Image 1: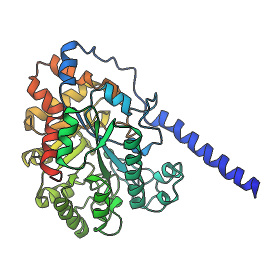
Image 2: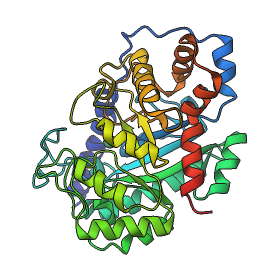
Image 3: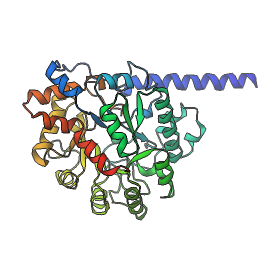
Image 4: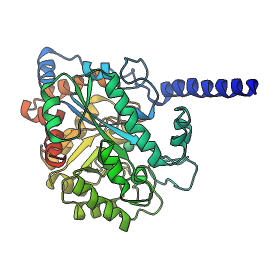
Length: 378
Ligand SMILES: [Zn+2]
């Protein structure tokens, strides 16, 4: 019996150590890219602006977010150095084996089962909904451990606190409505646990909506239509990143509130299945919504910071300056050329291009905050 306990403990220890090492590979920073020097004017502008990053996946990894790490793209000390005021934490709850942006089969085994196995929380092995519940608790524990460094963003007044204060706001969302589980009513439980962003799909089709990367590319299901209505009533922000084109049409037709595409590129500039069509970007922005530009090669054509600013420039030129934001996807198994502590490089490049400070402030955070002010519970 004693021997068996030892075997189990050693196995669990190995799983955890391998998990930590795996992140070194999955969330690398490409240090071969030369970044521009950030000068005093850009620093002043950046650090006097409320900065919002609309998407990260860091909760998927076991690393202690409150402590500075040399692994991954984001943690609290690095976010402070990068001058960030609000972070949107997305919770991934299920990713089928062999997932890819063109054809992901939801019937294949779940890759995240392994990730959640390292958490020693048996409930997370049960369902995506249980994982969403677990991650809300985990963010809550991180907020407590941060001793005032992080604070939850649950309603509009929280946005005013983070804009002027030293704490970084933490906005919680799920990536894929499988997190809701089998009943639409579960959304109320997730709301009560602090979820404020509802990403309808991730890589696979779920019972509420079809993914842009799934097999059938349908729109919302009847349950998905109910979910959109319930999110509107609860003042939850709907995220259409990863949603199929027909699904986005459905959401734009049904939603009474403006929506976000939290981390994306634009097909008119970089044409692939991960990115939104110009038509959808236009519709999202003209409806008062926001599009967060991702920081990796699939969205911007390259991971260089200049390429990110090229995509932002394309969006501003074609769709106006009021709907473009930052949506890094840090710690989302991408390979950016900088981590969150180096975010001011984007401000430097935008200034170098002669952009007005008012425009730069909108992109860094003004547009995202305006949307959150409109949609979150009063
Ligand atoms: Zn994503």
